[in-house]
Amino acid sequence: MNTHLSRWKTLLSLAWPLIIANSFWNLQLTIDRIYLGMYSTEALGAAMAVMGVFWVPMALLQQTASYLTTFVAQYTGAKEEKKIGACVWQAFYVSVIGGTAFLLLNFGSEWFFGKVGHSPTIQKLEVDYYNSIAYSALPTALMAAISGFFTGLGRTRTVIGINLVGLVLNAILAYLMVFGHWGFSKMGVCRSGLRYDHR
Image (cartoon, rainbow, N blue to C red; front, side):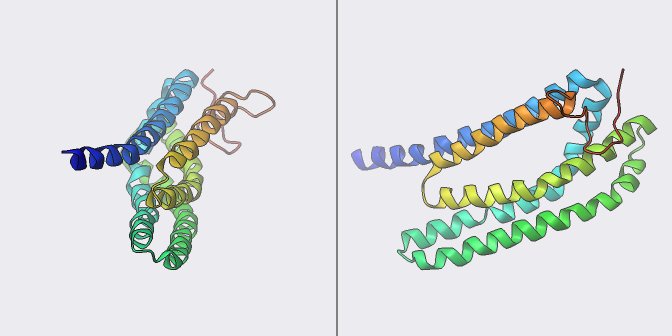
């Protein structure tokens, strides 16, 4: 009985930081939606449509980069730590190459969202937003690899710290850039000069 209880405690001590870290990610997306909803209902509608499309290839890239968890845990448990370095580099290569290649999808975004059938105003916002968040693919994949490394080592509380820093930075920078405070240009849903102002 004590053995089973000890195993459950070990499992929960590893799992709860990962649960919290994933909650931070969902909270980050929620904060973004709140800001865009405050900016305009059109911007919010475009963002909701885009994220469903964005996460199809992004989930593949993110989960491929985070495969590192399995190998780090395996080699750590087998006392073969010297093999971990090669796995880390492979995850970084996947992140950098995949994140950079992700930007190629921007060339087809106007065609794709033109086929969706939304109004021209919403289509423009969708293209702008998709082309903007495509730049987040590389850092997101790198964070998945780094988080996977620490998770594989069993240092899941470090993962909370990584995600918390990302949450706070995103909340601050999104607020400044969406609404144009503290010297930032008002960007709304896009990073370019082609901004949509609902007022």
